[in-house]
Image 1 (tube, one colour):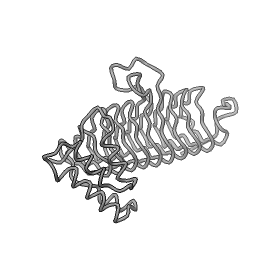
Image 2 (cartoon, one colour):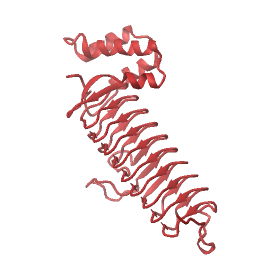
Image 3 (cartoon, helix red, strand yellow):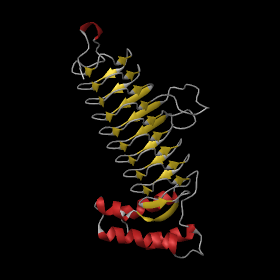
Image 4 (cartoon, helix red, strand yellow):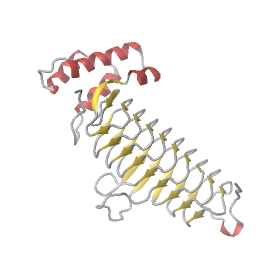
Length: 280
C-alpha cells in the first residue's frame, strides 16, 4: 500500500505533517489529524473528526459527525463511526461520539452519536475490543477494557462498566446497566440490569452466579471472592421469603468495608429504569 504525506498545496495546520494518508482517502476540510496518524485506502473522514496521535485506519473506514478517536486506536475496514443514530427521534442535533485510546475496532463495527433525548454523547472507553459487526447505539456509555464479541449489539442508552465481556450474538435492550467485571453469555437477550461481577446467560438472560474466572484473572483476592460469594448467596439464593430491599439491608449490616462489596451494593441500590436480572 502506497502511503504519502499530503501534497504541499493541500497541507493544513489541522493535519500534522507526519500523518500518512493514502491518495484515495477523502478528508474534509476542518478535520484534525494529529501526528503519526495512518489513514489507509478509501477512508472518508468528516470535517468535525479529530484523530489523535497514532490512530490507524486500515482502509474503507467511514467517519462522520463530531467524533474524537483516541491515541493508538486501530480501526479495521468498513467500520462506520459517528454517523447519525438509528433513532427516528433524531433531528440532526449536534451530538458527539467519543472513542478512547488503545481500542481496537474490527470490521463492520457501528458506533453512533448521542441524542437530545439523553446525554448527547456516545462514549467507548480505553483498551476496548469491539469484534466484527458489534454495534454501539446512541447515548451508550461503554467503560474501559470492555470486550464485545462478534455481532454483540447495544441498544440506545445502555451503560457498561469496566472489564465487561459481552458474548457473541447477544443483545442488550435500552437503558440496561451492566456492572463492572460482569460477563454476558453468547446469544443472550439482556433485558434487565446485570450486577457487577455477575454472570448471565440464556435466550432471555438470567443471573447464573458470579464471573469467578474473570475475578481470578483480574487479581481479586481469595478473601474478596469468598466475600462476594457469600453476599451473592444471601441476596439471591437464601432468604427468598424476604423482599430484596430487606436482604440488601441485612447484607450491608454484616458486610465489611471492602470497596468491591460496596460497589456491588451501590449498583443494586442505584436508580434505574429497569429491574435487576435475577436467577431462575
